[in-house]
Image (cartoon, helix red, strand yellow):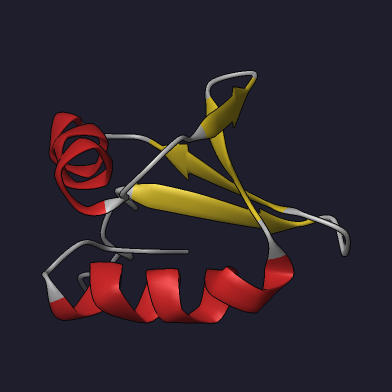
Length: 70
């Protein structure tokens, strides 16, 4: 019996309540962020730092564009 595995996420999101960290795990995710996140960005330990008010919309847009977000 074959066990289906979950697809490898392109982005892993961590909720730290005051900020969300979006960890890009693929070249596609890094390119997507570069092309779709306007203005100045803040990075911490390789993750995009996002204010809570923007996190849900950003995750939705990534998913709509075909990225696997976990």
